[in-house]
Amino acid sequence: MTTNNLIEFNCLGTIFLIRETSLNRFPDTLLGDPKRRASLYNKVKQQYIIDRHIVSFEAIINYYETGKLIAPTIYESIILFEELKYFQFDNETIQYFYNTEVHEDFIDNHRIVPSNRILRAIWISLEYNDYSFITQIVKVLLK
Image: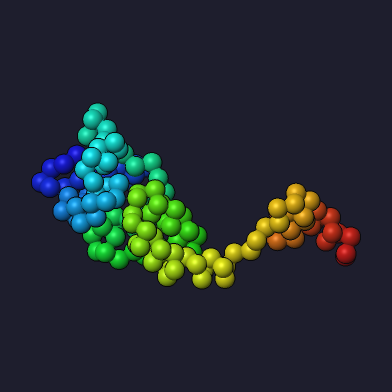
C-alpha cells in the first residue's frame, strides 16, 4: 500500500514500511523499480507480499534506507547473498557483499560434505554424533 509516500511490505506476516524515495535510490532492483515491484502487489490486502527469508528481507530493507548491508550471522550472510540476487541488486553490490561478508566466513566455517552416499552417511554420523544411531553403537562398543 502506498500512503504518505510509504510502501508497505508483508514478509511472512511481518509488516515493513519504507519510504518510496528510499526504494527509488536503487531503481534497477526488484523493489526499486515500480514496474517490477508491481508484480508483488496484492490488491486485496493492499500490500506488497514478500515470501522470502525474513531476516534477509529486513537486512535488504535496511540497505535501501541506509546503504549499509549487514547480515546478523554467517548462515544468514549466505542466505542474504542469494536474496540479493533474487531482488536483482547490481553485480557490484553483490560481489562486494560476497567479498566482505560471505567468502572468508563461508570458507572458515563450513565443511565440505562428501558427495558419495556412503561417505556422506559416515561423515554425518561422526559430525553429528549425538543424533546418530551408528555413533551410539560405536560408543557402546568402545565402552
